[in-house]
Length: 343
Image 1: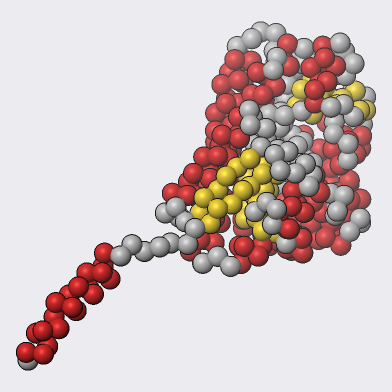
Image 2 (image 1 turned 60 degrees about the horizontal axis):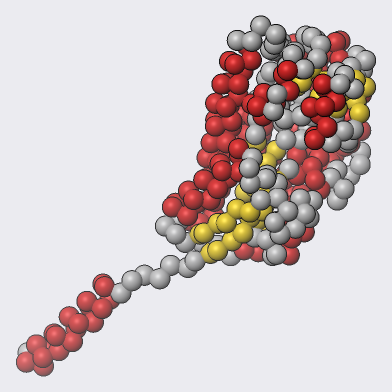
């Protein structure tokens, strides 16, 4: 008994050490490059996501978001993340369509989505996330999820109420699938940099433009000349791809993987909600101006444009096996959701 009692102080001391010693958590410090500039309104939303990841992981993950071009060029992040130069990116997948046309199909399938939630539903519950990982895993990336800045508005100097009104419309559109779809609808798209949209509308060089979201258009004074904006837009809604290095992701504990996946779903909703608020304020200001007429296309006209776009999707589908898979997957989902009429 005495021997046991004599050992109690030592046992107690060991117990106190066990309880008082701090638990050292594994720390992960990563750099994600975004395709946004530091002055863009959604750059701050991306930084807020990084802060939430840090809080949700109790400081185990520390993310630094850097603006476009900080480490590599905007169209080089796919290779940089795969090589571990960057640990992740937030970007438009269309930048990598030169590697595989499927990046354009999944990154900005022109005419497919009339609302961000439609795309989110496809990505999260309609097979899109698995398909995206099938596309990026060979490049050494893990797709965490998709966000969006929302459906882009459409700038026009003349009334556009139907698909028929697009015929002969001289408009600015990015080269690639966007131009091909508008050409198929009867418009006359031209390739102009975003920096020339304002002056081109002002001087009458173009009648309309596919540019960006309504609030940005309004803040830049585009509606001074393009007095017939179409909102919500009917054509373009670029995906914001949130991906990271697959080797790093695969080595993470399961709880941190889940935190990342869930945080991106929240980030997507946060970005859309914040930008929709900004758009709502801008739309209210525009509608209060008697010189501006905000046009909202009917669901029937949106479906017509989507049908025209689908003819171009089919052409892109033939350019690679993964593009074909993307075409079949998105088309099947749109039909099942009643967003596209089955032929």
